[in-house]
Length: 283
Image (cartoon, rainbow, N blue to C red; front, side):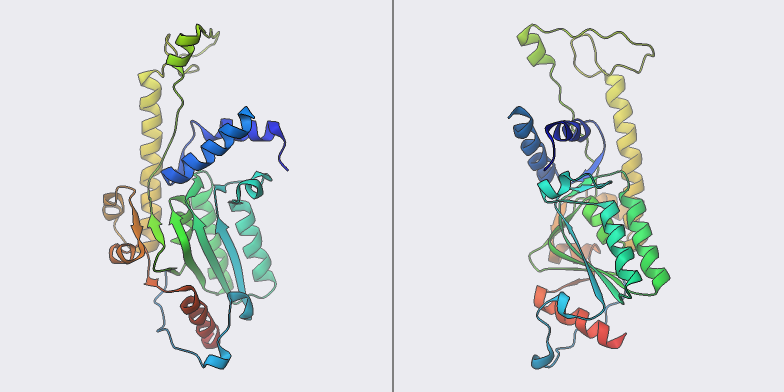
């Protein structure tokens, strides 16, 4: 179990840094931590297999390595992700490497995440895709719930992105949340005093609100990361950067996500299992 100081460090890391995460997921993590601290390839046609041969689950299919991408996503493994039901980019690559070394002939990402930490996501997606390309095996993503923001950044690197009919996909945007405590401090009669060197060292004005120059710098960094994220999605989906940005970080239902080019196909879970089984037969 994570120690109190680990959760405190995580809370500090949550605010003021860029995240590729859907807003509802961010607020859920934020609320939980606050309470704790105060207490795509061309798809072959889907062929119906013989009923007697139909597998019940992906684990029943030989050669398939399944990686679960769920909950809040972080760059490094720290132990807290299991507490919050998430996973790390490091663990994703480690699992893929293990599967490939064991002789997997297909890697499947089962995705149900609203996103997470921005740092490391695009490099992880690129590395994962290269690992599978070098091994000459397909990488397939299945959205079994939600693939938003950083989770979609990982998903779109797959040869094919397939979504459940009731899944949600998208949120290609960047989020930073700040906590302006100036009114609270004023009400409590608290006036912090900083002694520093360097004009940009302190982000606060005299009333403890954020300095306009600080907000402007953050916006510049957010815009730069947004351009990189949109370009990343464009490279893997074939959509133009302008079309990606035109989605305005909206989260789409599966049918609409397919129309704009975020996903390749829509399948139920059982249809997806059959699809992977048929893909393995043809390999």
